[in-house]
Amino acid sequence: MSIEHKQTLLSGCRKKRQPAGAWLHRQGEPQNKIYVLHQGVARAVYHSPHGSERVKEFYFAGEYCFLYLNWLTKTPADYSLQMITAGETSEISLALLDAPENQDIKTQLLIQQLIYKEKKEQMLLLNTPEQRYRYVQTHFPDWESQLTQRDLANYIGINPVSLSRIRQRLNKS
Image (tube, rainbow, N blue to C red):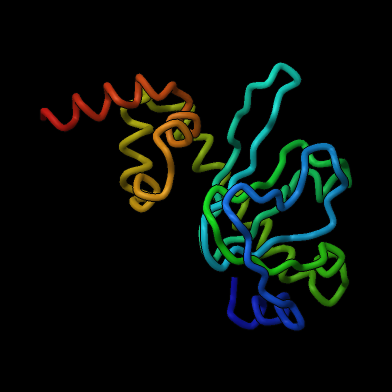
């Protein structure tokens, strides 16, 4: 997104410190804000009724944290947004994106998200677990130092033990 558009969205917003584990938004609630992540790492996570969790997405400094589908369909959040590490955020009203004068910003966000989601889907569907891990290493090199092994494994669709085996095998090569 252009610097001008970022400034438009952030004008009048204050930064807020967030501790590790803080909930930015809870699953099942209506979504009315975007969180701009200035520092730290956050995640979109689904909590099942049986107590398991699935991580949909990670967010890093400079990224916008919100749930596109729930915004576009005006439905309650399917996921919670949670800080993994301590950080700093700004809150922006989602109503800003629906304003006629901000349609260009909305379009840019949607294009960016579509490209990202298509690449992620391609990575998950067309690759083996080892290839998915290598994809993350190549395209998101900072993730390994910022995420737990459990979170990284969950993202690429394997368990932490399998990820550990892949890492061991690659380190022997």
